[in-house]
Every structure is written in C-alpha cells, then in structure tokens.
Image (cartoon, rainbow, N blue to C red):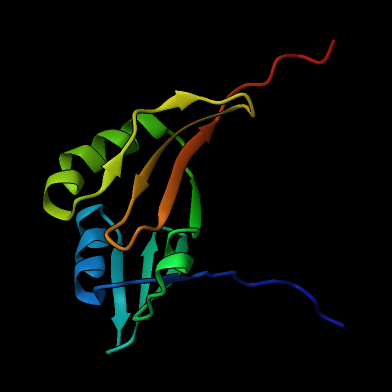
Length: 126
C-alpha cells in the first residue's frame, strides 16, 4: 500500500479573477496554467489554485499561511509591489508572535488573509 502524499493545494476564492491573478503576479508568484475559472499559482515549491468563486463570508474567513525563510524580506517585497496602492491590500508590519513565528498579514483583493512568516528560535526548555 502506498500512502505517500505528493502535494496539498488550497482552492483560494477570487472575487475578480483577473485582478487576483495580477495581484499574485505582482507579488512574484507565477501562473504557469490558467483557464477561465481556475489558475495554478506557485512560488517555488508551493502552490495553490485560484478559483473564480466568491462568497463574501467564505473569502473573509479564508486564511493562507506561507512559511518563508525571512518574513521581513517578504514584507519588503509586498510593499515594493505596491500591493496596497495598486490592489487595495491591507498590509501589517512584521511582528514576533508568542507562538515563535515572526510574521505579517496581507489581505488580497478578495479579502483572503495571508500570514507570511518565518520560525523564530524557541527558548530552551527549562
């Protein structure tokens, strides 16, 4: 029996499909494949499926977590991409969290919340 997992992808909702694709492209993601209703969006080894589907309650409660090597560099990339000005994204400053992650939040054009962060060293167990 082979129960090895190859990949797990979320279906991320998009109120305005083309605008959402442009948002992710501006952040540095690639869209190697797209149809009228679905786009394969990736950054390096991680990916998700952007879908032409929008229910406000769903999008407003949808959260993606992107674990990176350096949250501050990612924050600089999001700011440099003018995500706030060009797409109306809400962007918070990076913060160290009690759960040993430094992260920041950015909200995409459909209201999907992204937490982008890196692990912090944990204090030695005493």
